[in-house]
Amino acid sequence: KAGVTQTPRYLIKTRGQQVTLSCSPISGHRSVSWYQQTPGQGLQFLFEYFSETQRNKGNFPGRFSGRQFSNSRSEMNVSTLELGDSALYLCASSWSGGDNEQFFGPGTRLTVL
Amino acid sequence: DAKTTQPPSMDCAEGRAANLPCNHSTISGNEYVYWYRQIHSQGPQYIIHGLKNNETNEMASLIITEDRKSSTLILPHATLRDTAVYYCIVRVGNTNAGKSTFGDGTTLTVKP
Image 1 (cartoon, chains in turn green, yellow):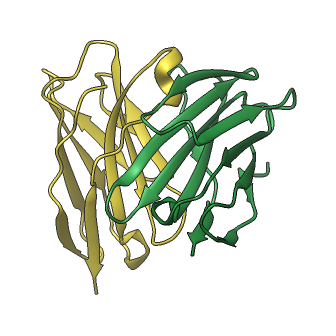
Image 2 (tube, chains in turn green, orange; image 1 turned 135 degrees about the vertical axis):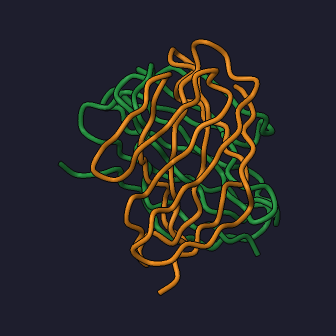
Image 3 (cartoon, each protein chain N blue to C red; image 1 turned 180 degrees about the vertical axis):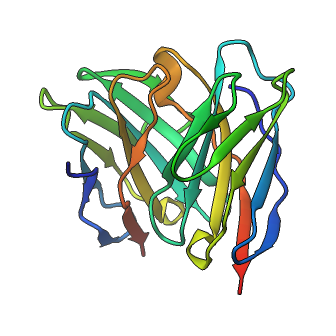
């Protein structure tokens, strides 16, 4: 079956703009998590959605937000972009949480100029 | 979630077993040990996980000590394609499972 897909794969924005990234989980998976990866901070958890509800949240400012739709697809939005938001944004899906493994997508590479 | 400690880098000869250690001395009884790897510029790939028993799958074996304070990921016959950053994480097996705390990982370099 198809893996986790993320769109777009690459994105260039300027400071102050906003951006929306999309993630389609593996069919049947209801949990979607988002991570930010930068050379300096490594892989950091942003938030997790399960059945259209945010279930966990990391330590990121309110400029970072997300949502999940009834078909489990998820979007994350970053408003008022800063240079430091340049990163690889990864989405991961799992069936429900518990001890289920997460499957990661290829990521969206965001560059803020 | 408990914190993990891994060596920053390791080398392994192609064809030999790669043994990657991980310390998780503050692990709780309901926390699982997961291993992922990330090949440059790709998303992390799930390898294996376990609670307290040793586990084996087609990719690797996971050995967890009896006190659960450390574990070892074993790649039995490393190939050049196994060169990657390997992450050991511990995660509660309940509704917090969607939240994984990644450390810096171990960069494994498999050499011919």
